[in-house]
Length: 615
Ligand code: F6R
Image (tube, rainbow, N blue to C red; front, side, top):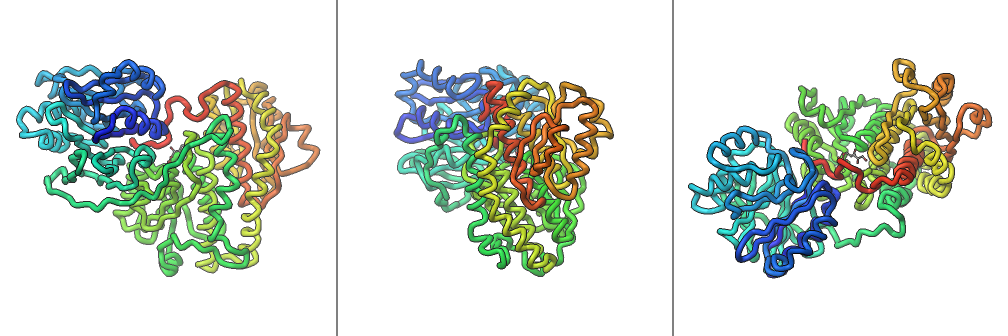
């Protein structure tokens, strides 16, 4: 989380920094700030809240804006210290001659702070970051230059960081460093750029070098040098051409990016099937999987590691892979996976699922699994991400850039990857009948059209949103393959409307949660025709008997449902195993319309960030 940018060149730095930060707002929006290096001083300008607040404040600093050609900027997702102006980055040394921005968490900051305070450094914020700038200032007292001071400081800090440092004493450079947080240097003509992510610099250059962990670099306007933190050895790197075109992010007439992205899902499915599912009687083509057919056949298990919405896609993946390939599959939250002794080996395929490819917990987890000899398959929306770089096999889900913090189209694209992967494994192993595979493929090809049908009949969903928008709590129930959808429906609702929503396996209700039901509680049952239809219907009846207000999301047209459910949201019939694609979208819309009805900040919900780069 947090985004950083830097500029050094002949242009005015402030507008470049602000534009860059705008592209990084998905990484946090608790506060923002810039440090502009001028001939006389380092001007720090910060504002609490969204970037537009910084833009307003910046207007009062025309002189610094006009004279600064070197600067660093930051957009914050608060980890240590409340989101206010004081805790906003950049942070300065007491001499006001060094300023830094930081993304990550410094784990040993308390010890360092105590020792630095003893040495006379005065702290003003509650952040871990401020420790770094004082540490650099302290090191500077005995180091020959800023480079050595930064390097010495880096050796003393533990944790994760992407850093930019500027100093009034060496005004011709920005020093940058990276450990477990992304950072790239964009290379221009007589100017260079620094950013946490490509969108912040792509309008200026397509040439860049990525810093790896434990590397730091001196960036001047006409060149850069990269060094290893520990040994100090110089590292040569050839710049890469970024796989991106500058894109104008537009809502295309929709009120929010989330609504636009929900509507893009039919096309996302088409894109993901293109060239992979070429005909229903032909095997799936998934050249991205680099595991040999022999190794694939010998797999003893699969572990899928992910967080949040990506983990919900993974749970659908588990269901279908176990169903059709017979390989046992475990799904685990990355944050849990990393702090225990996981039984992983060369006969385990480890799949990391991540929209951003930058989720810190998932990165750590896959690296842990890789060290134990597992083949790492990454399913991500970002082919240029850290996870993609670590992958042995890479399936890029091709959902296009997702701006809304709440994931929608990337989830559907992840589901498509799992359907393709399941069929690919089953066909390679020879454990699915050709006719059965053909039936699934035929329905997969119908998914975009069926989803378009869902998207063109939103009235019931809007009505449901209007009726239940003021609910304090919300329950989603389902079983089998739609259980993960109940979890996802609840997650979507709580993250953008802040309603306390929970997804339950319908069969689990009677083991505790049923105690919460009364006439104020909406219970939405996902009721798709298939093997657990009758079971869920009974669970819904049990809820009705406890006076809960029942909503059905169903492919059934059974008139009798009207006596149980206050609202019935109909969706097209589809093979049960593909139904999560169809059932998720109305729940995304329901969350959207409820949040919109409540006047919430749909695209940038409070406390969240799109890319969770801290553990
Ligand atoms: C929810 C959401 C989050 C992410 C989670 C993992 O809408 O977006 O729950 O799914 O933070 O992020 P990625 O997929 O980037 O690893």
